[in-house]
Image 1 (spheres, helix red, strand yellow):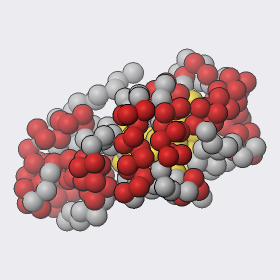
Image 2 (image 1 turned 45 degrees about the horizontal axis):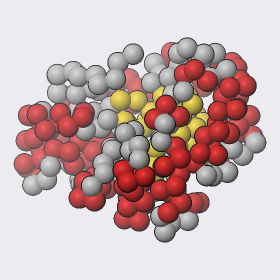
Image 3 (image 1 turned 45 degrees about the vertical axis):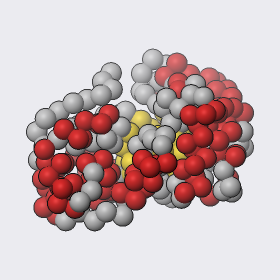
Amino acid sequence: MTTVPRVGLGTMGLDTPAEANAVTTALEMGYRHVDTAQIYENEAVVGDAVAAADVARDEVFLATKVWADSLGYDDAIRTTRESLDRLGTDFVDLLYVHRPRETYDPPETLRAFDDLVDDGLARGVGVSNFTVPELDDALDLLDAPLVAHQTEYHPLFQRPALLDHADEHGYDVVAYSPLAGGRVREVDEVVEVAEKHDTTPESVSIAWLVAKGVCAIPKASSETHLRANLRAADLELDAEDVVAIDSVEREVELYPE
């Protein structure tokens, strides 16, 4: 089954060609995972930036998401084809159900995603912002393997039951907003681990996720931040570090329903 690269680049808010140059820079420095979505309205500039990189398309793990208003069978097929046109590619490596609401109808939506995989337009199926019961339902209905569940996950918003479910069923968890919108700099437990390792709280947050088997897709635009986020995957935290961050009791959800 498809394996998601441990650290990727989130692209929400990279809306102009100049901003999307971060995608080209990231790929040329070693990133291989780029994440976008229909609702971001940036698939065209992201696709151009992927094409501009001196990296073969088959080496890039490219993901997009079908928005909640287009999850009926016909709309999911149509809008995925439109996404591929905007991205300038014949396929995406991972196609997500962005949120299970509005037009989401599990049998019809997931049948469309299975057909998109069968037709070679998507190499894998993902879901995003699902609960455990919704994940169970998807697993029962999909013919294709579930590759990943993308969800908000960071030291201030932890859902260990989601990690347990993924481990039990053999799919990846992909964490968006892994830096809690910069708030990890204000979390004492994260700051203390960063000081111990002579690094930044942002690097520690990514390393903590990777240590837990989670993929992280932080957004960054500067070369300095891009390089630091990529290197964070190689930062080795010890068990005490992980437990310290696991014990954070504050809760901040950045993107509630």
